Structure formats: C-alpha cells, structure tokens
Image (cartoon, rainbow, N blue to C red; front, side, top):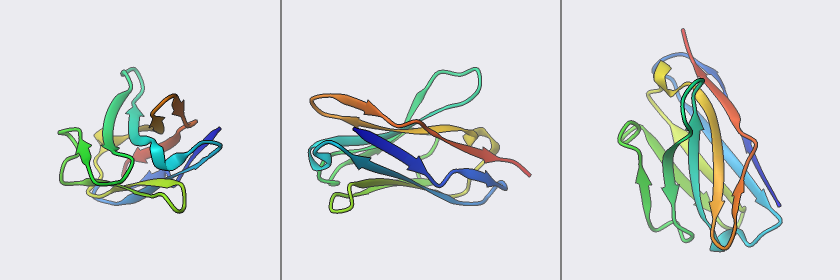
Length: 114
C-alpha cells in the first residue's frame, strides 16, 4: 500500500499550488480520501475530505472558498487545488485513505512566504 503526495513547494502569498496523491495497493475507489496538514508545533488538522465517489466534499472553515478537493478513481489519485495561499497555510500536507483500513502518505511540504 502506498500513498505518494507531490506538488508541494515554495509559493508567494496569493499564489496557487495543486497537490496530488497517487494511491496503489488497495481498492482506491472504495475509500474516502482526505487531506490533512500539520504546521510546526501544531496538531495535524483536517483540511478537506471527499467521499469514495467524489459526490460529497467538506472543508475546514479556514480553507473554504480557497481550496478544492477532487479525485479521479480511474487514475487512483486525489488532488487538492489551493488558491489564494497565505503564510498560515504553511505546513506539511498529508493525504489519508479511510475505509476498512486507514492509510497515510508521507507528506509534502508547502511553504507560503514572500
């Protein structure tokens, strides 16, 4: 089982990034997927989640209207489009798969700084 995040990096405030999470080793289409983030010295927090079909999503209040979660079951991937990034969005971003088991990726660093 693997979840591999990519797409992180350094971006200026107001910029955008698109994170990807590629899954393998399990039946991706049966799993709800979510993105979490953890900033230095803080607890890991839920950013966005999407159900197994992509028909239902939810977001943390802090990212509503700026971030969009989506998935492509044919590609076994989940995405997080992040717009209007702010310094407080700086964190390591993790994807998580939840169904019969829970799987985590290794994380990708997002740094928002001028």
